[in-house]
Amino acid sequence: MSEYWQALRRNWYVVLAVVLVSVLAALGYSAARKTTYESTATLYVALDRVQSVTDLAQGAGYVRDQMKSYESVVVSPQVTQPVVDTLKLTESTDELASRIKASTTTDSTVMEITCSAEDPQQASDICNQVASQFQEHIPSLATFEVKNMGTLKADILTPATPALVGAGPSTSLLLGLGVVGGTALGMIAAILADRMRSRTEKPRSSRAIA
Image (tube, rainbow, N blue to C red):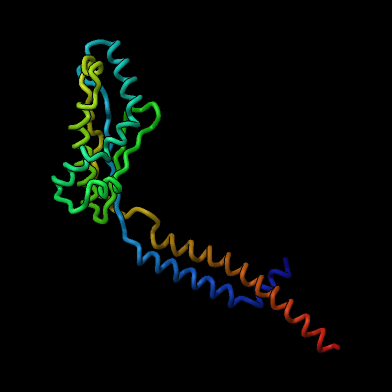
């Protein structure tokens, strides 16, 4: 351990240089990356106007089984095209879909729709429009048997609101990672540099003695 400590003391400038480079790289990445904001809306999918307890149980099972497939509906052109038209977006439906994520949990009929944008208000507006369009489209997804049980619907439990902070790591976190990572790499580089210097100095010492 003392050998490593001595190596670090002799090569402190190597550690400092690597830390500085790492911090500058973190600052450069933070300045170059675009800040994105995310907003999330929560929906509850269920059968409405069910006629019997049996239909209620069967309908609930059907909805649970279909939740994963509904995730793909959220990013389909049937939903995204009206959003593009309503908000007068300049991007294609595929580009918009890449900024939308729908997620559900096992044995649950609750869906979360998350949308990202460089502007927090736009992220919120897109998310609420996607939720609204999905809400309008979902009744048509029910099979004939399910339609006989009741009406398939999606209720918006929590509308999306503009995010106050951007998504992704903050500048302070990136700087912290730069310092920690740079210190670790610098220590390794300093020890390796010290060993290489020792190997080159030994032959010289041997020739001087001879």
